[in-house]
Amino acid sequence: MNNKIRMLINNEFDRASISMNVGAEVPTLPLKNMQKYGNSDIFRSTDSSEIQIVGEFADLVLISALVLWRTNFSDAGLMRLELFNDVNQLGKRVYDSGEIGVIQQVTVRDWDWRIQPIVSSVIKNLQTRFSQLWFEGVFAKSYRITIKDPLNIDNQLDIARIYMGRHFSPAVNFAYGSTFTINSNGEQFRTDGGSLHSQQAPTFRENSFSLNWLNDADVPFLSSAMRDVTTHKDWFISLYPGLNNQKEFDNAYACKFTTIEPLKGVAYNLYTQDFNIGEC
Image (cartoon, rainbow, N blue to C red; front, top):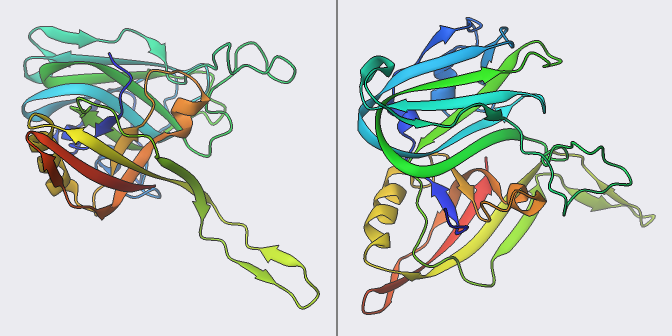
């Protein structure tokens, strides 16, 4: 796959059925919490050795990405995604990721041998842990997600949100001049003595970028997806996918559009649009 920006906007998981084959949910923190936005309403299972989440999509849908957002997985955890072309995990298995690590390990380029062990998580310093999987799109009717994390120090598995669907990548990547900001709701004030005090508050990421070379193949899918989410639904973005380093994970997160900017036609079969997003 290419390394152009990936936007997972239409979340087919929200419209799918969901149940567990292996493991059990905490009754007050059920599976269905992963199908609605809200960072305090999570899914939890006390079976950290293995859980299997299964379900059927609302229709035969195209799937090319899976994201498990706001998890507590250990660096040693494993995950597997299987997609099937029939209901109840029957028919042909059209995709199988095999067992892979839930947390990406730091690359040699980013590894600081002075302070880091040889095996280190690339997201160790991020506030939010997550797992992502991108692949060539396949049509599927049902799915099975398996997670194994017996070394989890909490002895439980937490997931706030699952994003699964077809991701969008434009024909031409975003333009130079994009911005990345780490922000917070904390306020600063200066005393009469000249001291500058700040409120400690959680941080969140914001990005702005422009797609200046959208064509007639890009626009229908993108505009339809944006009409679906507008500014009130959450989705997932990765601005630098496939790098497997700190830069990729600093710029990959669940987000919302903070504004919806106009689509401008600048030439025949050529459009431009600005995007402003904030972590959620």
